[in-house]
Length: 77
Image 1: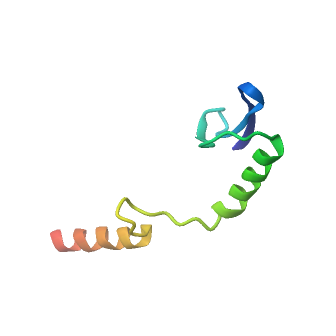
Image 2: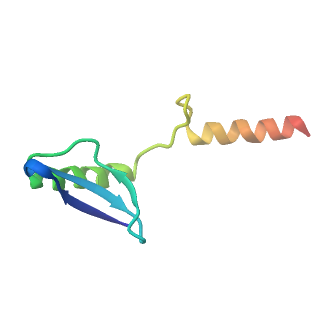
């Protein structure tokens, strides 16, 4: 995977996270007036994503959701 910094119109910048085939997996929500701001945003994302939790639509953690699935499967047997 790779981050790609994208020049936009009117001297704005954004970023994309692309897979090995070059398909965009994620893109910055906004654009930035300075390229250095994009670089800082990418660095912040890279630092923070390792500790990011995975939550379901109700806010339950992935572990909680997996536990409920296992309980439901046992109950249906």
